[in-house]
Amino acid sequence: MTAWIDGRAVARDEAVAAAATLLAGARSPVFAGLCAEAASVQAAFDLARAIGASLDPASGPSLYADLGALASGGAMTTTPAETRGRADMVLALGAAPWATDLLGEVTADRPVRGRASGKPRALLALGAPGDGAVQHVAYPAGEAGLAAAIGLLRGLVAGRIAGPHPLADLATRLREALYGVILYDPAEIGALGAEMLNGLVKDLNETTRCFALPLGDPHQGRAVAQIAAWSTGQGPRVGFGRGYPEHDPWRFDAGRQAEAGEADAALWLAALPAPLPSWTRIVPTVALLGAPKGDEAQVVIGVGVPGEAFGAALWHPRRAAIAWHEAGAPQPEPVAAAAILADLQARLSSTTTNSERSASC
Image (cartoon, rainbow, N blue to C red; front, side, top):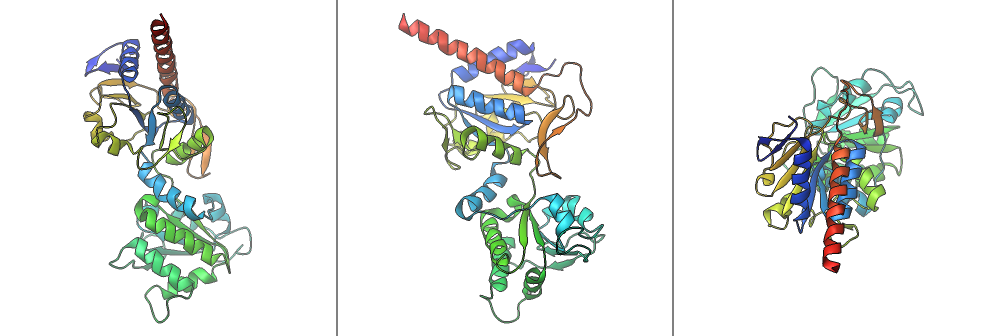
């Protein structure tokens, strides 16, 4: 079985009908998670628009640490491919970059394009000891934390802080780099750190070339941000309660809505792995899951895992873009979350039409 209602295994069609009933009776539904392929995320936006729901991706905290800084002052960013091809200096902020393969890749060879072509590549670390197997120079962040260290570094680079300082050597290295790249995880450095980092990069570009490279989160957040942009012209935390998209990162935070009693139904979309938040236990929830157990929510519907059961458009970290992923373990007739969402939209549209006809009679 691939569908459950209150932990009881049922046919998928029965579960979809129960999900449609739950959502149809809601005054303020919220769609969350959004950890799926592009087609299913787009289908979630379409369904939310149709029934007046709000949306909040699982990657919201990470995305909005970056989006807030981007909205206030812009950003100068690059891609992993450009980093490997051009950077003569890479600075890793915090611990998160060391959990990726990128740092090992950039230290394996030298830049091959641009002014730094053929020159040695320096790998630096701020706020984490790094990996002893990869040669690098580490600098401490200090007791104030990583965001404060980035702010201090910006002051040193711009000459606003004089005298000896533990980060003075790092500031000099940044100024002298021909093509510097600063690798970071928005969730780790936070909104303040992202704001300081974007300012640092802009200051460095007054005299040299330097770019920021944010790490993608594991929940398709970068893809969701793009889909939200082309669907609504805004960020992913939007609500359609008044018939048009309204963007408000605080108001449409799913966890806040649940705790405040504002959300009376939820749809959790996680065709790819994403931890189910605790608030789904207090809000009647429909869960579309790639690897369900059956007891995760009031209504659970199993869906195919994109990039495994079927080919799909997913975020590609190396390309820093949405790209096609072939099926790793194709299934004969996988049911994509997009198909379930389209079915829900058809059922809910039919319910609305019938209600309107009854009212007119």
